[in-house]
Image (tube, rainbow, N blue to C red):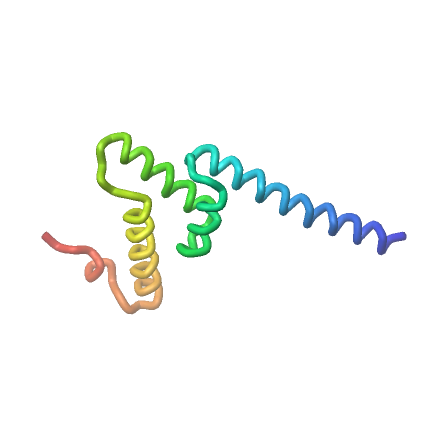
Length: 103
């Protein structure tokens, strides 16, 4: 009986996790105006998480609405450069003074 309760609890936990991911993805798609398939492809190709993808698309949309030429791809590239610099700094291979352009 106890084993059955554990199996049922595990099933509910796994099913709830997949259902909530789908709901979040649908919400992100509705907010950003991007199809779900596009978001899934971007996540796979960029390595960004769902929240990072959402933020990048929302920022790109806001920038475009204000006349900026920065695109989603530009924002992702800047984010990836920042991640690389952060890793170098964490390893002690680079200091903030070296990473910050002067003048």
